[in-house]
Amino acid sequence: MLARKDFFLRWAEACVVQPVFRTHEGLRPRANHQAYSDSATMAAFAYLAQLHVKLWDYLQRCAQGYGLSDTLMPYAWAPIWRPFWMHANESPPSHEMPIFIGPDVLFYPIVRPYQRKARVFLPQG
Image (cartoon, rainbow, N blue to C red):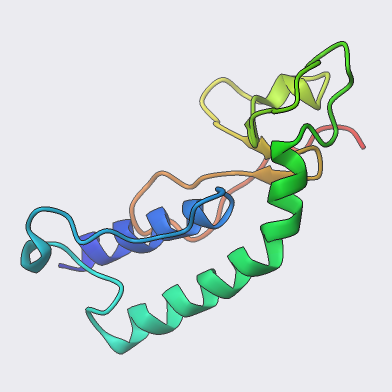
């Protein structure tokens, strides 16, 4: 059950930097960890929801092309999650998966269960 809780919270953390922050019980709610499964999860989910609200204006600007030149993305929309090369000239190690959330936020997902720390590659600037 703990692995499911860890996975649920990691998924919720990733959703903070997406335009839609929500949960879904799934087809078998009793078999899956939920936002309301225990008080610690509810507190963590509430904190993440508040963080999403604080990022809302930034995410909206990113969706409208904030930080992209007209030659790179001459449209009224742009991806919020952007490949590393869109805002950095160098490349991270091939086994890492950093993603820019707009031009100002570098999102480094941790993909190993129970991992709490990671070394990250930061681009110049």
